[in-house]
Image (cartoon, rainbow, N blue to C red; front, top):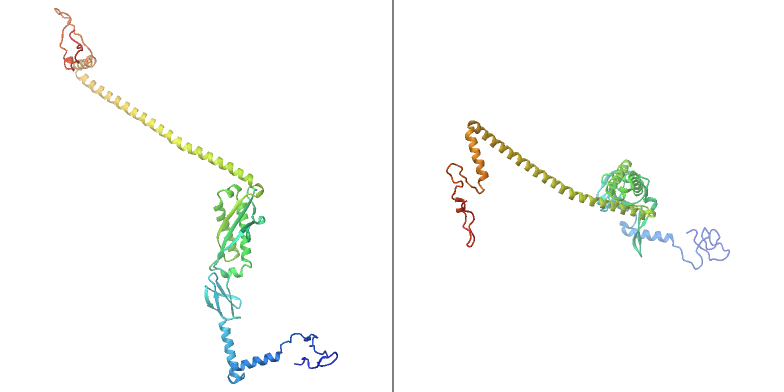
Length: 383
């Protein structure tokens, strides 16, 4: 080559065209004892020799260039094959414009630069933690680090609450193009939208429901608000779930809040016990009231029925009395005397002329009674 050292070396000898004696045109030629640079002519010669072995005739003729051209075209055509992983979707671009989407597996597109392909992780469920960070430590294992600038939020009643939550999201099956071209940083966008939605929902709520029983309501409200915002952006993202991990007051006042929670729990327990006692006593009292009322109704019905029967009996007797007053009076007299004197001892006096006064009678009632035991005097007799 023109700058190869041809001279025998020496201080001022002009072996080369620049008179530098053993150095190249940039005065940086090989130093004495250093590695020798590769000879470019030798490399080209060897490459031509290897190429002639594979070409017919041993030189580059028309057929050789044709074979080289066909090989280049074949390689260019085979470069259009590509593989889409199971958690990916392929988006084929023709001169930068989206033309179609392809499913996981082996696919083909027109070789570059006609068509190119993008393969985002569109089928994978992604998770973003807000207010906390999961740190992998070799000694202590997996630990969680709190991020106060993300988790501290102001409630509607002007209290501060520490909220840590996670968002599960994925790309919409029909929104891969929107996901690729409408937003520049998908994860950052989802995180910003999630934090904004949580702050808005917490800002509309009071602290007590947030700390106790409104977790499901808050998760649903945040998910709906996030989805509405992302759809407005045309992000091509669907929010699958919002999970509240920790909802506590700030660390500085958490002990006081726990005392308040314990007092509220005691209050609820006392109210529940009182309600249980009322639920037991009130039905018993109502049962006794119903029993007394039914007994009074029964006594009323019985008394009215007896009075109605006596009235009916009296009216019937009165009707008979009107038909035969004398006979009715005599019968009523005899019935009354029978009822009055039927169970008493009687003495009959004969006040007629020639009578002795006391009239003896046969005690038929005593005869029909059971005879007294031996050794006892019989009771009753003539009078």
